[in-house]
Image (tube, rainbow, N blue to C red; front, side):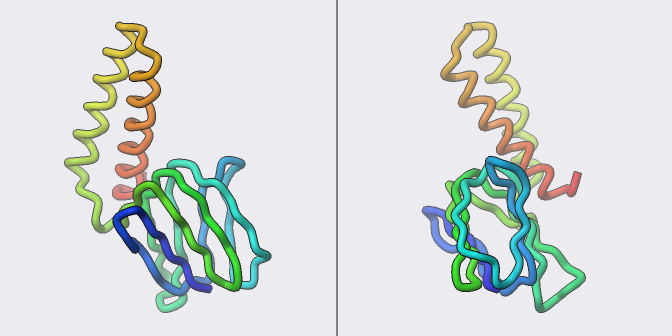
Amino acid sequence: MRVNIVTPDGLVYDHHASMVVVKTTTGDMGIMANHEPIVAPLMIGEVRVKRTDNPGHEDEIAVNGGFMEVSDNVASIVADSAERARDIDLTRAEAARERAQRRIEKAKAQRDVDNLQRAEVALQRAINRIHVKTGK
């Protein structure tokens, strides 16, 4: 099957795969070739792709929400943003995590629920990028 990931900035990923694993709102989901058509909302999380051209290798992509549609042996992921592990700047991701943690503390101190929610999402995104880059 073919796996592609698209963001508002364009195509981020496009390869043939034997399996793709995504984090949906109901848990992790693994999709293999000839899967029934499905549409699933995605959480902030890692997408793992087992490529057919290198069976021992798995590509990791940090995805920030969106949805996946599977039909006719094509798994299409449409995401707010996505970044392959090899393209993630770890220093930048760690700085984003620290900024988000500071914003959370400030929002808690000010009892600002809206900014707290936005900061918590920013923290989840930063942690996801760090996890995808480091494998931890």
